Image (cartoon, rainbow, N blue to C red; front, side, top):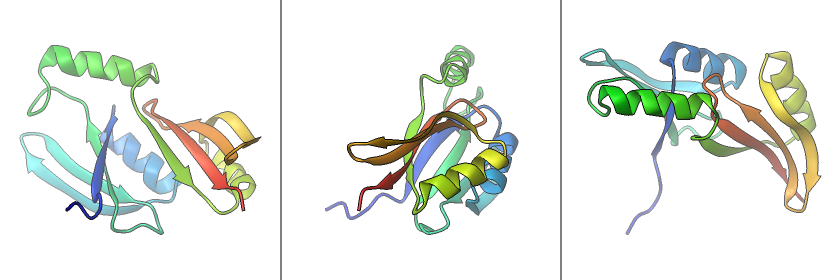
Length: 137
C-alpha cells in the first residue's frame, strides 16, 4: 500500500535561478544540493512546514533524461507557461501576497474570492504556474 508521496519534480530552465526563487523569494528550505556527475545537480527544496515533501528542481537539458530535441521542446513549453502547475497553501493570503510581491514574485491574479477559498496566481522564474490559496474556514 502506498502511504505518501515524498518527492515531486518541477522542470526548470536554470537551477541556480530556481534556487534563488524558491529559497530567497518563496522561503523554502534546501533539503539536498549535490552533484550527480555528468553535469547533473540534484537540488530539492521543501516548504517550511512540510520538511518531508521534497520538490526536485530539475533543469531541462540534454543528458540522462532528454535528447537534444526533447530538451529544446520541453524548454519552450516551460517558457510559454504551458507545462508546470501546482498549488501552495498559506494561512494569510493577503499578507503572503504582499510579502511575495515585494520580493519580486510575478502575480498573474491578485487574491480573489472563489467558491473554494481565496486564490492568487503566480509564476516562478521558469514560467511554471502556481495557485496560492487560503481555504475557507
